[in-house]
Length: 70
Image 1 (cartoon, one colour):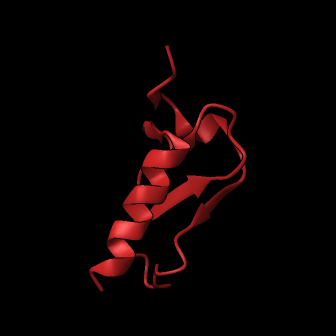
Image 2 (cartoon, rainbow, N blue to C red):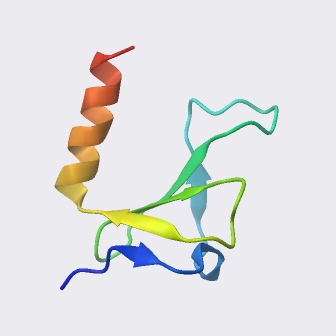
Image 3 (cartoon, rainbow, N blue to C red):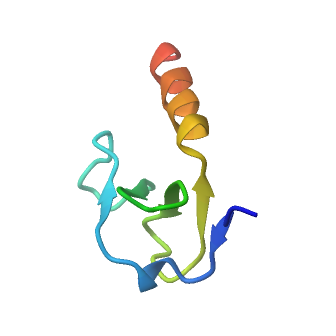
């Protein structure tokens, strides 16, 4: 079965913030590129918390849906 969560997201390095995040320390998400089993996503305010791992196709569909709803 494919991994769906990472209990301690801080154990991985290379996280990047959304290009739509502001620099004011507000809410934003971070993703990790080139993860072997999908696209991990975490809350930037809780770096030691869990990350959800989406399938690549699921992540692409999610991003596409967001772009159409601007």
